[in-house]
Length: 107
Length: 119
Image (cartoon, rainbow over all chains, first blue to last red; front, side):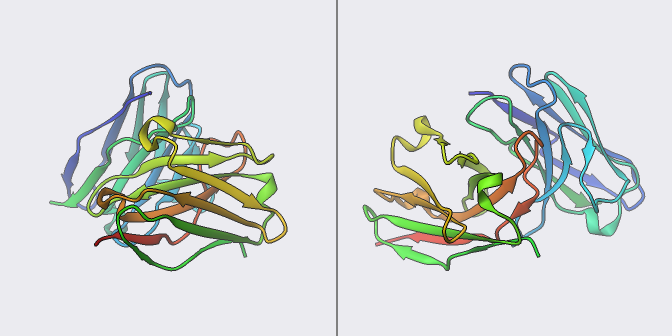
């Protein structure tokens, strides 16, 4: 199985901060990676597809990058609505594994 | 309106089976990948399996050791997941989600079905 490792596990930041979350794959997954946001009691929400494609309706402060084994999700200016947990998911090989999540907390 | 409506919460005893439904509206299931993901209390997302547009399904056999069956009913636009020989660590919220094949992301999710396994 491909292991997906996110860092950090928890991130404390303030409104207006630039925030970057990293997701590393244990082997190359090309650009077969998505990013999701999840808030407590809610289903995940797709933010980024195919590593850098911005899902329709998602604010442009979110951006994705990377390919191969290292990927990033960047929030250019953190907003109050962005405090949540973020997950990456790979689609290169079954099983389509998730990272363990990164919780973005208010500093 | 595109949405996925999942069946209601279930309480099961250890060793029992549970079958969860996910009914699609606003689109046709047979054009999409449909995945199942679960989340234990306070934990992360765990991939369970996917049904592709032609009905072929792949599950995480190593993790679930043949306990999972995923099916789809095109006549009712509904997908199902059945988990057998339930254990306490199967207690979780179970989500279905759809993706356009090749899109690299699941863009519509059900609200989740809570399954509690307890004697």
